[in-house]
Length: 240
Image (cartoon, rainbow, N blue to C red; front, side, top):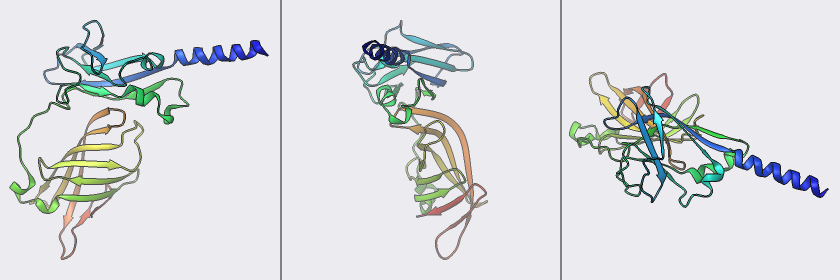
């Protein structure tokens, strides 16, 4: 009986050490070369030139780390960059932070021997710059506010902002890639009376995951004496 218990403990131990977290996707950054290196380190530490993963001409990368190694880290977050001079704790650095300990401790991955997640490394996400504009400059402030969008596969709570005409969408359920929110911009074509949402990225802020995309949702705006009405084959949009 004692031998059986020892054997079972050994099997469990070996399984734990064989488990890996794998991240794969595309890398995106300012002035990115055709091929190159992505450096990684723990948040709070400097980048080590010897710790890197390569990306090819298609900008694809693949990163694997043992879950046992993650649990030994001093920080629960790994930071990725193409420039070793980036500061890992500066919120405006051109880096991406993946909350690896949060991922491996999440109950939704309990039944997986290996955790494989599709995420892009959008290294310019926190250091982007753009020209300031807002909806008031174009007399579109009537579209600023909260909406709901019901589609065949999800339900979104949407906020259209004034500054930079921001679009923020919150999904009622995760996508197949565990994404929970969307970010982008919006615009209204006065001649065609079409309200458009442009989704640039989907994200899971709990884990630090990001997927770049180029989705566009269009709605024909029907003016009436009451609330605005929207027509689209995408789903049902309502202003709250």
